[in-house]
Length: 163
Image (cartoon, rainbow, N blue to C red; front, top):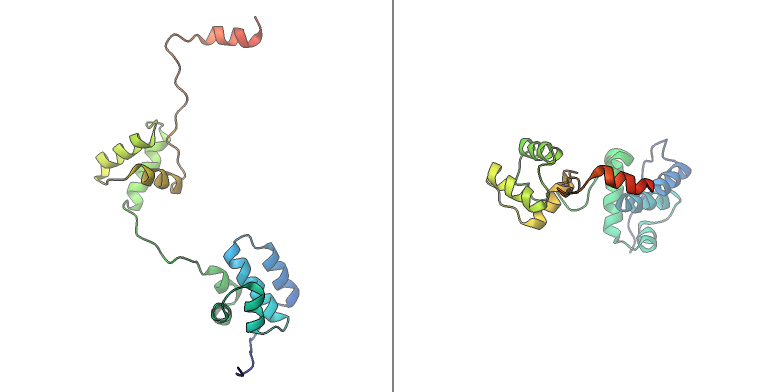
């Protein structure tokens, strides 16, 4: 298939060596593939060759080139996979309240957290949903291990010391 030749107006800072260094340093896999494609294009390969080397569709490479033309590497790196997702059941204020309450150590289990959220905000989570919510909010409903009522800290320390 013959079409018009690929023409990309490369930015001055995006020379071959800097693109290669940027692609090799990238941690996010989806962005790394895009930067790899741009580097290969910069070295003179065609879109079809780049798509074959990277194992992606030619149209994907064309999207990445369009993003580069629109906003440079910043635009290429800014795109996310997966869309925006479903909106959460709790608003920002409610999520902040969950984080604050988790920090007090009031919950021992995710079930305790689920029950508190249901009582406070009238939102019903499943147990797995509470685990996901707490992971997203980076809080842990853990408290220190309970101490038995008959335990003696002095005797434990003496035993550890070898007395």
